[in-house]
Image (cartoon, rainbow over all chains, first blue to last red; front, top):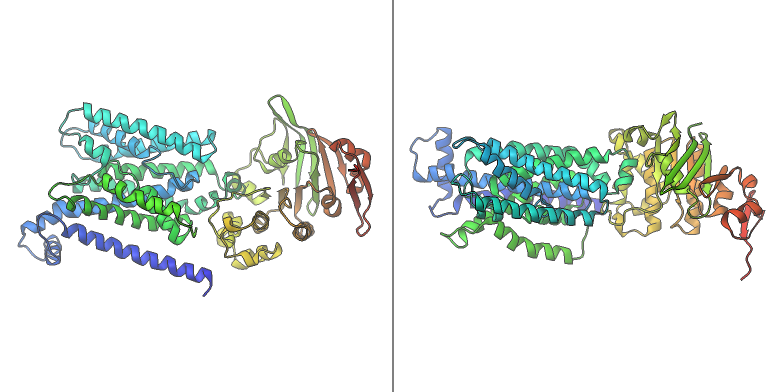
Length: 339
Length: 252
């Protein structure tokens, strides 16, 4: 068997493994919680929603109104963060670029808070979500502008880290100072969480994540060429400035959707692409699709941990992603890489 | 003429990196650009490639001003091989060579990619990850990528700098063959004898100015080279090839 055949087999196995993983964490997310639920209850909820059964039980409303949107939000936000990580790393040619680390997620958080201020009480979360997207895009495009003057990607990441710290502090200060029942707590914005998700927040976030994901997929091959270097990419016909515009706008949208759903969550966008790249190589389209699946598994799975490990107390999922992500990151950086 | 410059001038920090350089290259011609460090060789190539807009004069490929042509148009007009490549590329050699066809992916066959690899002796490296190769192997892969790009103009900045003698000769022979197929090639070369043996014409740059332009026999005279490089040199007939042979004459 040749190396390309072996690689092809490894990629196929990864697709299957991650697809099964998404199904598994989804079921786990629906089953776990203070109200006991089994697979038959999940099936019954489906029947009730489809109008096949009409004897609605407590478990049906728990599953439909609370657990299902929460599980889906974990999948969507995780997928968005995974793809955003791939796109940032490709765009800046640095595998340390992460939506949280370079300030895009805190900027989306600030946008979301501004959106809440603009939304009338009881209004839809659409404006909040769009403002989160706008905040993410603004910071991502600021990084693009800085990248034109700071060609060395390590320095660029440091600039992003500095911006990220400042924005996170600003976000924390605003949320602490703004005493309103409409503003999610400091804990939500700084450590992340999926407990407040509703169908309407999910509905507002999905288009942002899908649109951003499609944007990244559309420029995946150009990001591959950019891996050779900016000059080389230009010589091969890639308009690097336009590529970064599309890529980073897409990152802003996806991170806006993810932050609007789950608050500011780190490590998923950094660790998931790194692990997936180690399995399947650097091609961005494949990496984006598999990191979407991997990010979905990571966030939805760790959310199950967050709400069960110290039940009935819920631990912010951002803390769990950091605690779980840090050792994985260290292990991957220290091991001998295949790619 | 497929590629040419008219009075190209580039200034940086009040110093002229290039000063009124004129160069025309016809299809089928291999032109070597030589000169001491800092003479402006790479700057000229970057202007020709469209990477750098000149402060005066213009560069054209196939009638298009390279300073205003789109990157997509330029990629169809010229390929470029730099002296070094990014050291951290995680793609396999075959994928990197295929990126030469980024503009016309759908019209590309795997045979065309294999043929480009074959020409510069990197077929056996096809499944290797780029960053695991030696710098000489990477340089040949980059040349294969440029060949795959199939542009009528090739610009090469020290394409043999990391190569052993056999592969230096191989690469120069490939450039000659490409010229035979109608490609106009401009190669910055440090090795004067490679330029003497393989180039149709050479441009000797000195302090940003074109000191001489002509066949190697016309340009490579002992006085001219000794003055340009500030190093005593002699030029004799090559004992095995029909070209001049440049020797340094300082005795240790």
